[in-house]
Image (cartoon, one colour):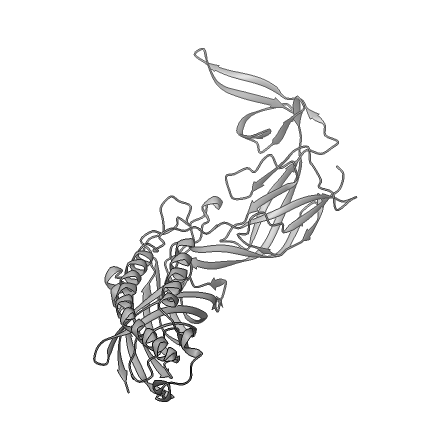
Length: 231
Length: 246
């Protein structure tokens, strides 16, 4: 008798279920419709740029960060200066349309010497129109200034450091790589990642080591270590 | 995401609430239980959600149909077959040229078939005397979209920093394979004679898409037929009409 009652109750639930099924379908339609219509993504939320992380370390104690007095990098072929890199940890962009990128490495050596520079203001009709910088017996104009780095019309570079002008130590950093164009999505298109092949200084400011040869869009990843001699 | 999970849990709870199925296990076998058959029949269904989605979004088109077998009103092995095309050439394109003018005339299109196999388990009380009964179930699927085709063209690199013109990346035309798993919960109820209506909510995960490397291009798909957009496609639904053959 008990089994029969249970059975009747169970079968009764089919009737309940028919109504429930209709309700659930309505619920489904509303939820699913709302969910999927609102899910269209028309934005690119992916980080699209890949930068090469560089750490400057002491040659004497390779686990120690090497702080510089002043460091700027000028990408050859680009009208940009990356200045204020003194803390020895920075991220460099690479050219996606080439297989190497070169940077002019401009740093203040520890044993720096001041350069005598005098200023000469050029006046016209009582108005100052230019300031000439006189050094080594020649007069040049300021082409560009980025933080404490001065770039002059004759390609001379000087730092303004400790109250005077200082001649930097110049080298060229060449980074060779294979650019890989990675398709991300319809909204984002391609981003370029780089497989590093070689890094070298032309004059040997420091020793270089590729720590991670895959430059991707990952945030704050290190790729190259530079072991600096004490200059 | 929390909202989706709540919806899913609510659905399962609703289904279980309507199921006094465990109570019947204690008793002796009734006459109806003796009428239990090993195999009741086959459902052939068609997913109405795909045409619905195509009506809302003209960039997509899809068809999906499945065969579901009814064993003892308890286990329902299922096989699904589908075909989908998707034009993911977005109206909005990220300004990857760095020029302030987004790339125009880009193309990203996909098409391919997909297959799913799996099982549904009926959680409701079973009326073994009837061949066709409503059922509410949970289940899983293994899905594969083998060698689906893609076309990508018109995108450029960003060389603006280097004073160079943006380089047009060569058009990519190839195929790749995606695999994933799905957990699902749904209901199916007879409406007229052998015809049934069903609704199903699916959670998709464990997606693997084979990366294609061609020259200096690496293609990671952001869409797979049967899965949808990788970022947005975690949840899916089916709204089916089916016929029961017995």
